[in-house]
Amino acid sequence: MPRVDVENLSLRQISDELLPRDAAQIQAVAAEALSRGQRALHVTEDFAREHYKDEAALSQLYEVVDRLRIAAKDVQNYIDRSLLLTHGFVPIIESTYPCHGGNKAVSLAHSLHLGLGRVKEAVGGGGAVGAGCRLAGRHRTSTGVSHWASTRRLTADAGGERFTGRRERSDGGNSCNS
Image 1: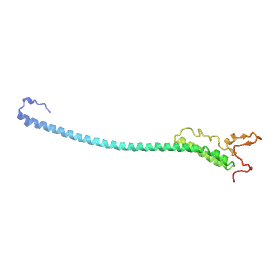
Image 2: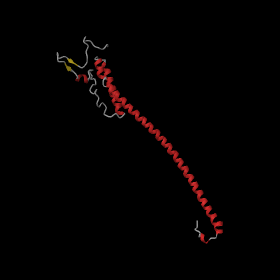
Image 3: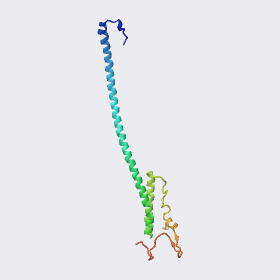
Image 4: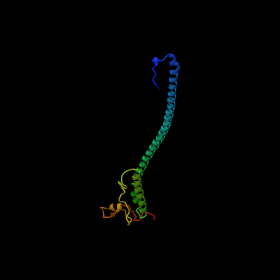
């Protein structure tokens, strides 16, 4: 737009030529600004929709992760409680079933306890497999006597009688029915 010296123009030239031409140019610039503004509005609205969609998806993801964290914590608690409960299985079985048939039950109980230890390690409970296991060393030998029982052998003060840690019936019989 060329610069015009308005001081040298007559009022009629200004109103008939200059103002209509400048008004048309201003109207074209305003229309272009309006068009660009509407495009910018559409772009920001699209961006806002995408942002809200992403925000909703992230919110759902946070909720799922929070539920998963709580579930993982529950699993760890269940595993810890199960490990604590299985600590007593082997001694209870050995004291209740001193016959050879109890060996399989002891082996299964110990396998269960070790399996729970592996699960605890897999879900992030820490520690190596069998670490801190009070049942460690209680594996059965080929003779059927557990290492744990063989290390617990006691000699009674009276008579030098040997005990293997298993209860025997007073009638000399076997407490198993097999």
